[in-house]
Structures are given as structure tokens and as C-alpha cells.
Image: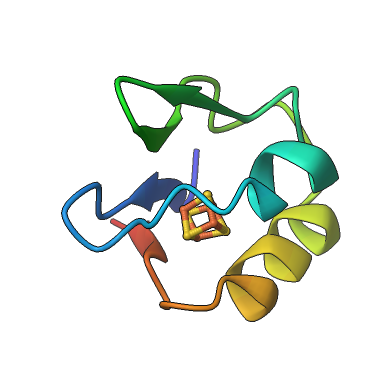
Length: 62
Ligand code: SF4
């Protein structure tokens, strides 16, 4: 397995973009997004979330 996507929940403003683009990876929980299923979508889809997040809260962790 390679990189796993994660969310900086402190930075997340809960705009909902990542949840709309990849609901099989992200969901809102207690006011912030969480990557509950990091392998739930193709890399390209997750990249869209990373690029689209207004506060750059989504990142790859090793
Ligand atoms: S796109 Fe960014 S700010 Fe919006 S819900 Fe997802 S992690 Fe949070």
C-alpha cells in the first residue's frame, strides 16, 4: 500500500467539497471532514479533493 489520504481536522472548515466529490472516502463528523475510507476512490478523485479544498486541509500521509 502507498500513501493514504488524511484530513487536518483543525484546518477543515467543513465546506463539504471533499464529501461531495468522494463520499466513499470522506464524511463530515463532528464539524469536520474525516477520511474514513482512504482507499475508497481512485487517486485522481482524491487529487480533485486535495486541489479543491479551500484551506488545503487534505494531504497525503506516508
Ligand atoms: S474540502 Fe477541505 S474544508 Fe472542505 S470539508 Fe473537505 S477537508 Fe474540509
